[in-house]
Amino acid sequence: MSKIGVFDSGYGGLTILKELKLALPQFDFVYLGDNARAPYGDRSFDVVHEYTWQCVKWLFEKDCDLVILACNTASAKALRAIQQTDLPAYNLNASKPKRVLGVIRPTTEIVGNITKTNKIGIVGTLGTVKSESYVIEIEKFFPQVKVYQEACPIWVHLIENELLGLDGTDFFVKYHLDRLFAQDSEIDTLILACTHYPLLLDSIEKVVPSQVKVMAQGEIIALSLANYLERHPDFTGNLSQNSTVQFYTSEVYKNFNALATVFYGSTVVSKHADIA
Ligand code: DGL
Image 1 (cartoon, rainbow, N blue to C red):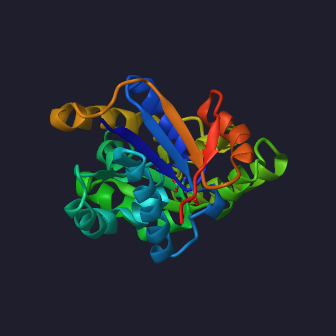
Image 2: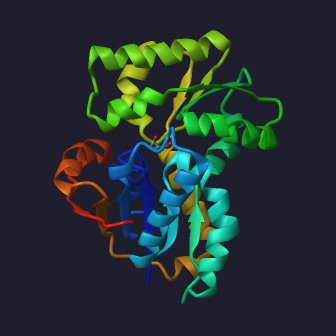
């Protein structure tokens, strides 16, 4: 029997795991945050790919036959290479085929149904924004929608360094949102295209115009995974159902637990993962 792996560069994927656990409480999850090497956001394609694939293989070895890249940067920069090249080669020698899914596709599939002005704002890491993944994917599903992007490279640093709720943090949140909305005041939907950003929601909501719908990805990914599992009953039948969650970090686990508990919304007790 196998488990569901959830990967992020650090804490952000916990905002996704929290919703997965609510929607699919019966399954067993293994979370891995590569906090020792986070943030990934401004790293090159090659490095994000290398780190992500190492972490995915680590989760495979922990009996996860399905891994969710609960990280936009990894989904934007590594998912394609993993799905097209690494995974087919890995599966040649695997006892059971492994699968890897990302967070961008499920988000872009529905976002056009939410905007009324057909103007969507994306905030994400430098890597996610530069990859243009959201622009390209939204264009496929909703060609009438115009996408505006703003990279917020400092936000993940503020979160990973536990600087939430400070005036300085509010300043940098406002700085980037002002730049986004200056591009077009009719943007009515804001996608938090980085799984860390829900932690800045209080600061974000202070600045965003009241008519704008702010969308975090947790519920979207949970719905999409529930749907995927329903459509793949043979695969789902092989998933163990003991309602457990294990947490791993590539950092010192004691440091991880405190902030992870904030992200996850209930107590996190983690172990150290030796990845590389
Ligand atoms: N949580 C991540 C994302 O969704 C990555 C943040 C980072 O490591 O820069 O993009």
